[in-house]
Image 1 (cartoon, one colour):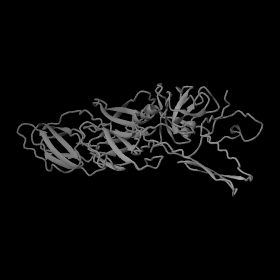
Image 2 (cartoon, helix red, strand yellow):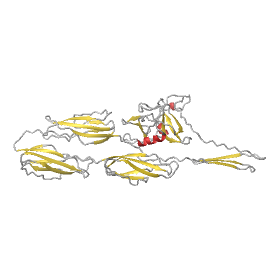
Image 3 (spheres, rainbow, N blue to C red):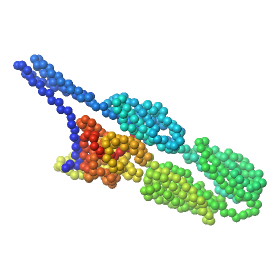
Image 4 (cartoon, rainbow, N blue to C red):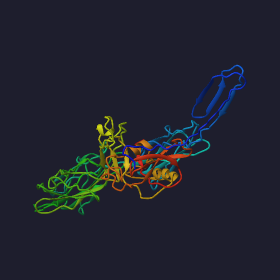
Length: 507
């Protein structure tokens, strides 16, 4: 049975024994000199006697060639038209061999013609032409072995289109001038807008003409009874938004007309999980100038507990508590008629890049096994702290690492473990990897066992061994694994199949 906090380090090495015997009538002291580095071990046995021969034995143990490691860099969020720099400069080879690089764009949005330039250089680049996800892999080669592919996700958003606001419907007397005002139009990017007014239809016989078609405001003379339909389109120099129209009812006699109010739920938004989303329905209007009441509805993604705060005001809010798409709908009423429903879409994404702190968590050991002060149970610091992000990931608030919350329940070989993590896409990130031993060990809680981990945040952890990427430990061809039954670590051969939990460090 293992005591908590005990780590098993099992390794095998090379034992070299050299024996020398004195010759003739003289005896002498022997001197042994050992020089070692990672490439070879040289053992020399030399006699200090002037009559004894000098015996020298050299044993060279070449370091086996280790596959290099590819580092494709951190995931990125960009806009259409941006040039993305791909930087694999942090890739490395444990043997110090020079590396060749191969960048591959293995998935891109429909309609994209983007290609990676300088795809065999440490630094390549890609021009984004279509909104969507670009999935990139980097493989490096030391001339003998190729690395496991490292993945990179580029999320490209299209330009946000401006919104035209032509104003509320109107009623005027025949012969009156109709004033048009598009100043409520907006651009999410804050760009300067270009305006385009047009009269789509008018009563038969009317000679109405706009005083201006390309300014924020315009007007025309309503010379004939009937209904005039006017359209406003706005552009920010990149694209044009959806046109907005209004109706002008013209009569030579006063008439009682109650115009249907118009609801405006505001612009679409992209926010981070955990943000408070502010909604704005103040752009809603009524052609008669009647006061409006507001009625908002929230459609949240699965798993969300969000509710609208002040849903019967022009500016409610809600918490984006999980990743996904939230749809808000607004209906306004002027006391007589209700508007049609207007919607806005709020997309919540996980945008927190892990910030590595360099801190170690407390081991969780509370039992003292000796009477001597100095055990882990005698100290408490950096108490384990995790955050369930609600998207299948858990953030370690002490180390800053982002963890896959649940493994897929499948046993994998050591080589397949690398590929599994490299191909994993979770919480919009694709740059997952197999953890090194110390990273995996930081999850161990020695205050519990079977499994020795906080099951509140990692509820499906097996009481079994999980692979780490670390190699060696004195075992030729060995690889480290960590047993979450008791928290022990061991280096054994790479054969067999174990479970896998991937980690993301933001690099």
